[in-house]
Length: 399
Image 1: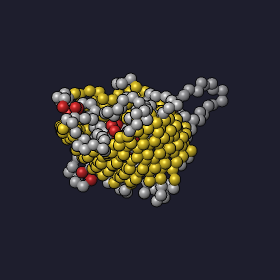
Image 2: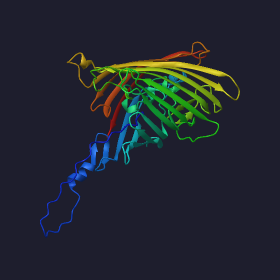
Image 3: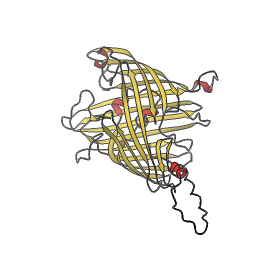
Image 4: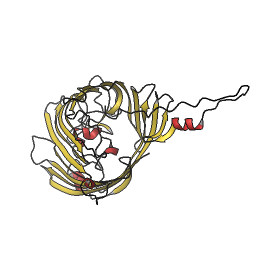
């Protein structure tokens, strides 16, 4: 389950047995070295591990500073008509914590963003071996890869233009995950989730709720996991093919880190959503690929009528040093294309995003510098077409 597996470090060694001479009196104290092993600064931040390894907890921080020549969400020609007012700001400031309690099978995770004063994630996951699990809490629904991928583990400064239209984002819910045919040619992961339908910060209500079903086939018998770039420079190909669907009732037509919201042309109401998605991903020898193809139906249950939205993206990345030794090893080059048709029944309303970028990894995704340049082209049947260039630079660091 995405973000759910946190493996404990090897159990610390037992303290040496004290060799006391007869008649000596000594008060046994906790060995300083032993204490350092339990409390340490490790790969995930500040870590604690019990002596027997049954409990492992960590606390980490993440900062993301960004310059954007066209700040904000671009969703219509109106967002391109405004004069450029580029800005540099702290885009994310996260406090994260997680691990397992009493057993590796009981995992917890929580995340808070102090730049927006928002409690993003709080969840508990029970793992039954390596073939199934149950989860309760609030987290990013396991619907589409691009949204599940942490913003700190992406190849571009931000997600594609299509993410705005199709993501289910964070929801309160319950979920089950099953792995079938482990390490076989039919190796698959299946997620079934029931979500509140209200987005981040909402509660369950009787008139709303979304069902999400995702199937991921792992042809090589190994799950590719969630996170972009082939930082491991894999010698063997690993790939995935996925299908997912969402169905249910909600008062909203889109979701984001701000909670439930509305796509252009919609207001607060009673809607029935039906979404379908096809997705592929692969990594091999420093190269990476992923794409999504979406279709979405929005039915207005108050006044009637339906709107259909389609779109998706495709992106590739590569470390040129895998082919040319003179190329800097920490540098990755990336490219992406995204497209959205906000209303299939209309013509001349398409949205396009063409993008190239580069990453310099100081310490994998935990410390990297990213930049990308995009040509955003939006058609509108009323206001006509508008295009503009968008330049972004970002430094993302976790500690």
